[in-house]
Image (cartoon, rainbow, N blue to C red):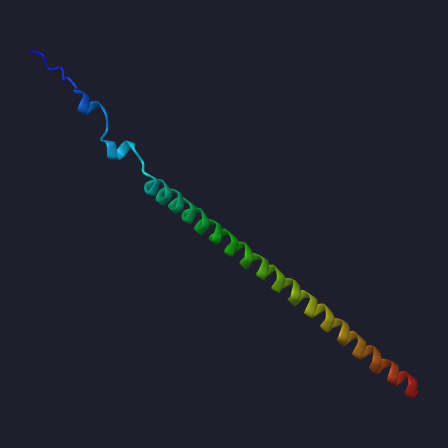
Amino acid sequence: MNTAVTLTREQTHPPIALTNKGLIDRAAIWSGIALIRWARRSDLLRSQRLARRQERAVRQLEADRFWQEVADQRAKTDAYMLFRSLQ
């Protein structure tokens, strides 16, 4: 019994719609890929901006604490100098 399957020319090639990509199809694929890349890039940039904003807030808080400490020390020194000048 012969069970070999023979393929005709119609069966060996995919339909024309699958092989010939039209200009519109190529443009649609290209724009879809570009949108996906842009969305991923936007997420990355957003997370980087958030990280920089948090780092900037931490640095600003440290600077504010430093200058508050300087002001407190200056106030103590001024009070001490006033007391010394009254003696």
